[in-house]
Image (cartoon, rainbow, N blue to C red; front, side, top):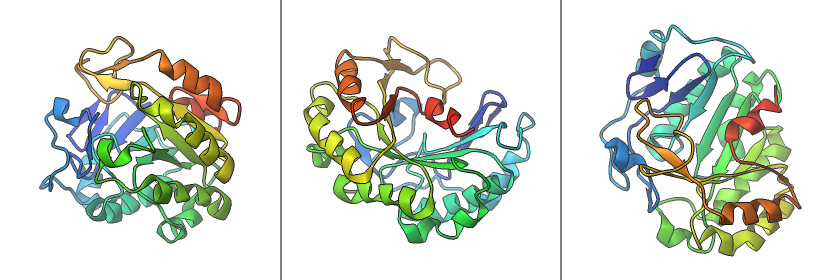
Length: 254
């Protein structure tokens, strides 16, 4: 196990990587305050890729390669904000060279220019997967403050066609009586960008009733499924492959 704050891994299966603690976005449903991390504020908890790699070298459970440790960016931070992006790119390159599968979740726009040089390091399809997160389209200004406009954010799906990098629509969490209002909009987005895979997931709460969140060691956060998730999954399954966990999508790339 490793837990430096910036790195968290219970075992060899998955390592959560962050170059800051807290998030400059201000999503209403954010779980970070429950972990004593701030949201929607200027942060002073940043680490360079160089120093994070020094911490990583103490991670004795790490397994390199395609079937080794999954590297996950973005559980304690917005890994693609202005200050994080440069360090995140350095770390992506570091782990790509080790052959590991990498997932990156963001509410920002990722451009062709951002990844074109990284693309040369990718050894197999799905080694790097991008998860574009969106819990609402019509109410994003109120619910997902300080994030990129979804219309711009969704242009990241062009990376699949331009760079052959899988980009997954990440509708997590499903918000009660909010996300469901945009089902038809999500269907339009899926068709427009020919999105193959979608995640529809539950909100994370301290009083959840589902599974323990994978990025906490003390069983303090749980998923809290709601009935509307089933209806959303049913509708989106008509136009795409739908999963409830990101790791289930990643398995198909191995």
